Image (cartoon, rainbow, N blue to C red; front, side, top):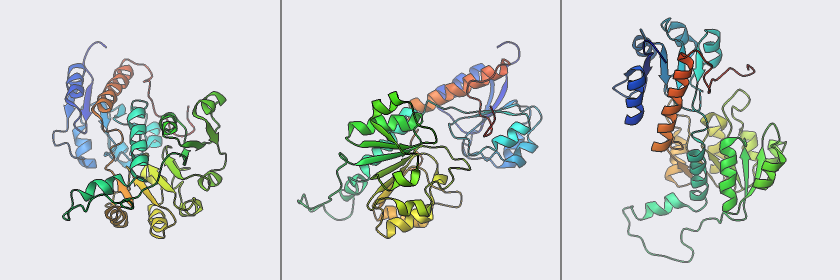
Length: 333
């Protein structure tokens, strides 16, 4: 890259090593408050900049895109998901959008399996006993009984990079692997994972003990676990979600757990635009649901790799080439 350094604005604080590298390569400005910016604040901050380094906490809708300074050419998302960006509107406006896929695979898969282990074994509940106000009465043969993982069946919705990594880990714990995807995976992958493809999601849901979601949020996957589908699930089954909150009808999930049909859920992502569902919080306090605070990719290694991917996308774009992780609207190539 030659000549003037590109001017970039970064909406959230990143690991020090990433910020230092960005400051070396670019004319970089950072949001010192590290708090989500309003649309007006974002527009003002982008004056004189060419690149917006966004995160999932930035709501970049069609209205905001229409107000961006004319010099902004690239939205380089720090993250895999782009649910916060109106990608179609950005495309129509001539803006390029990129993201940071792949680098989150291993950490997200680890988190999914951790939740899979913690949920039936009542790990969070058991750990909390020692920290409570009442003294632990000690071990007893029938105390804190959970459910064994080995021998159970896991149904994965979306066998992409992360779903495949989850399946590989789950096999080590003795789970049988089942998956639903629009397209069947190659025989070699199915053989390696000993995985069974289900062309019908409803049929798979009724046949497995644990359902783990690993599909992006699109028009087609919104509430893919609807109330009707949750009701089809096997009695005493569990739900795990480290992907997107929009994939589950939370109200229906609460109802199925409350009724005793489902044994519980472990959710790293929840709908919280208007505050976390109080019924979900109540179930978590009753130790029937595990809630974690969007931690699936929260490792230093992942965050640094995400930053490096953002840098590669910016440099490639500013050098006049197609960035390696460009995001296009559905149906565009």
